Amino acid sequence: MTLKGSTMKRTLVLSALAVASTLALAACGEATESGNTDATTSATSTAMTTAETTETTTATTEADGEISADHNGADIMFAQMMIPHHQQAVEMSEMLLAKEGIPAQVVEFAQGVIDAQGPEIDRMNAMLEAWGQQPVTDSGGMGTMDEMGGMDHGEMGGMSGMMSQEDMTALEEAQGTEAARLYLEQMTAHHEGAVDMARDEVADGQNPHAITLAEQIINDQEAEIAQMQQMLTAL
Image (tube, rainbow, N blue to C red):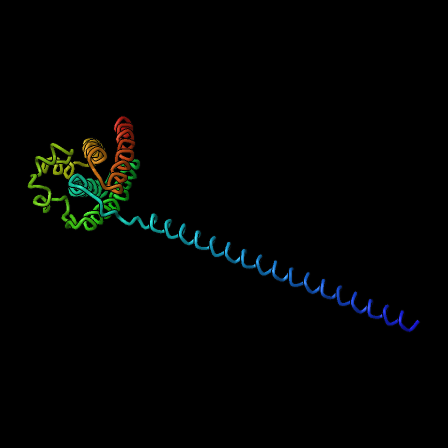
């Protein structure tokens, strides 16, 4: 009886030890699995964070609109000619806004020209600087003829729809509805010239930012030409 009791006691002890060992191994396995899961989760989180950071950085760069240095002569000519062209459109619009008796819709249109083309002037000057060129800052572009290949104002007027000095004087002297009519007629021709210049850039340019701007000018100013025709009919 004593031997059997001792044997049974030893068996119970060994069984208890086996159970305890199994439980310990299971616990270690769970801990290891948990550790791997945590590590996997951490790695996944890090990868997602890196991807999100990269995406955010790319989006920020695109939003900032960093100008590509890649360009050709057509890009330079486009900016150097379109800047004084825009400057004259702004000058014409400011001239009209200083008058009394201008129909409200024409006043609103003229202010829209200023609001749209002012920032585009800044953008094109930034392009020129990115390409190692001098910005065009003189009002009307009259001080930049050397930078534009020696082209005189008359030649620019014939090629791009820019107003002559006589045209500008006529607009300055006109008043009321007559001034509004003259402004819309002149600005229509002015816009048509800008569209032609922008199409040349789309066809011959190399810089993606300049081409994108040219396409925007085409779309915006063709729509504005149609709008001005409607306003002229209503006067």
